[in-house]
Picture 1: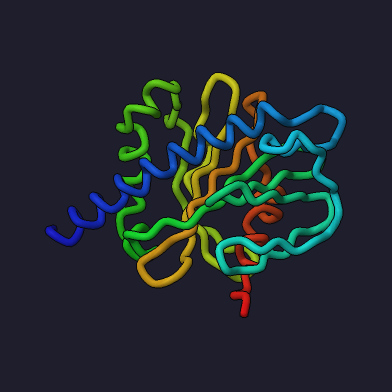
Picture 2: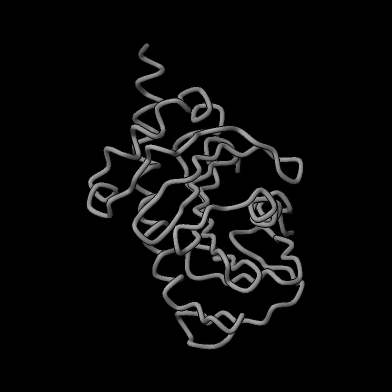
Length: 196
């Protein structure tokens, strides 16, 4: 019981980071243009839509054609084809993937109880937390978190010892992510290779 409470406390800490990521993603979505291009909110420049590699946090990630990426401080933003979705990736120390998996049934409740989630009007009634595999890597996804305008996935995956990737994927107009879109976003995370 004590270990489960410690894991839950770690989740709450990570959830606070997740809410900050969601707010950042929503800000980026506001900078997306409808002409199929993406504008970097820090520079105001268009981001090219070609296959590339991106270095972020000591790792290299493979970005497929049609998907773009932009490093902004401690976050990696990933923009889906024609800007149909945007993801934000960061790493968070303090809990392992296995610890989060052991309390997966409590993640929705923990998210719902965050003041920022209440302020933003997150609806978790149709949200589902499940483990899935993309690109040979396991992801713990809480999907279909709804707001008035957005549909959000909050996802965790193993990073380094006692650290996890935190990924927020957002679609506008209340549209839900498809499994193909999740594969595009999460396979980028799975492609990580430590740089020399």
